[in-house]
Length: 399
View 1: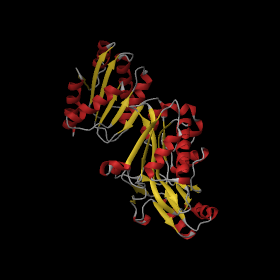
View 2: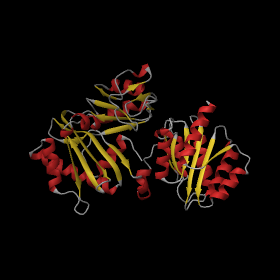
View 3: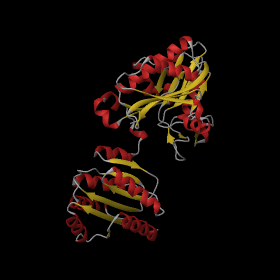
């Protein structure tokens, strides 16, 4: 689960991380009061969307100007003007894709006198099963670009969970950023605070870009991007309350209500599979035969007929879907349950596109019989390769 910058900063502030004062707003009419509350003389007006590259992004609407999604205002009137231009308009960045995201929230923040900019992040390292930090002197840039062009400017290290953050971790960060004296002490303190926040809130990723030195000699998190482990959210009702569903795909929201693992993709072949590995293999083989999957959807090992019906409805709700591939290997999941779920869904929503069903495993013959005797125009498949070819050919024939 992702949250907005201003929410991330509020979470980090609980752990002592230094951040600028700011006020979130939902309406342009609140901009003046927010600016007056902060006092100025400089304000930063920031679009709040779940995507990076906001400062370099551009709004689709000409009325929003071409100054990007993060703007420096030198007067209250400028704050008001920027708020009116940005709220409700669509911001396109390198991470949103060409469709962009509508800006429904702004964060008006105190301006900062920046001396230097750095990059600092923490994430779960799956290879070591530890929290790793990534540090670079190249703040304000996409870390992917830095890693590609100047990898020597990136320093990373893992933290042993048995010890937590130790003084030498702070010294590693200070050395990587060229800090000494009081700034080195501040770096060590911030690393400890970020680690504490990461562990306490079950984060998946925490990115400070940039971490700045102000002209007053203070380290400060000027931006913050945080995502949380969805499997641990039951422990954090305070974090769940921060969820902004307007930033999420409606189909993914519906899937979460039924405990379905669903991710919308850009293709036109809908997929319903049980098991993450089999789902990934299904996506790959669809691409192998020249088409693109419309989604990743894992119904899980113990799905009920109702759950399968919900999954099918979510797939068919996508107007881009021109064909559907159901690929089930029944272990715990029984093929006859899948078959009944598919039939129930087809009867409920109708079937407007080709449907290929491949069943194998527990109760497979019963599942095939149910589909065969249903009278529906369902294309049976013997194995995954056969299923992929049949759905690709069916979609091409219907085009």
